[in-house]
Length: 196
Image 1 (cartoon, rainbow, N blue to C red):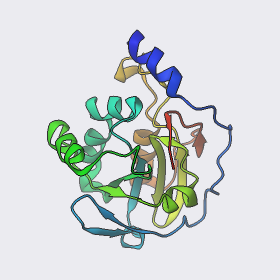
Image 2: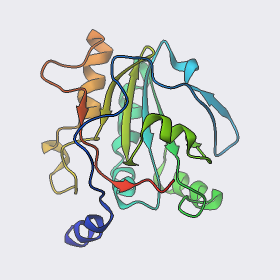
Image 3: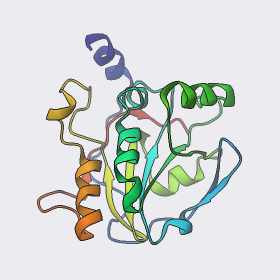
Image 4: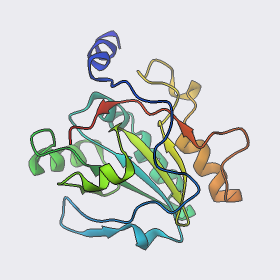
């Protein structure tokens, strides 16, 4: 843990304490191909709850959440509740994983949702995605949450003690159609700065 923390401190970027993309409005549209060549359009999810996770296997923060199966477990938990997950890699080619690395990544850790390639970084910039992982939750075509995965930047707490903002949001959205009382629509994101 200490090693991870020291490495991560060197990668963690200083971030403003506000969100640039407005909540409670429709987010930017996009059509991106996943690593298997299949195209995914955000319009296809307008009647669902969609979680976007900006992602890079080379980032220790992304790796930690993948190894811990943060999003894999959430995908399994909410699969039957009209919730979908998409990961997006907006890194420039020199900073992104190649296809062999991605196929190994998916097989090794059992990633169960598509990973999209934003090769030009255009979609990431539209969303003002700043780090990996950076989360955006869209409910029936409206952006309702963006920011951090949880309240544990360096993974120092037991999972049972963390506030998982994504899980909190999905639990309420799938029941009431809104964020839970007291939850903010933005908590400052943490992670590795995206290299556009």
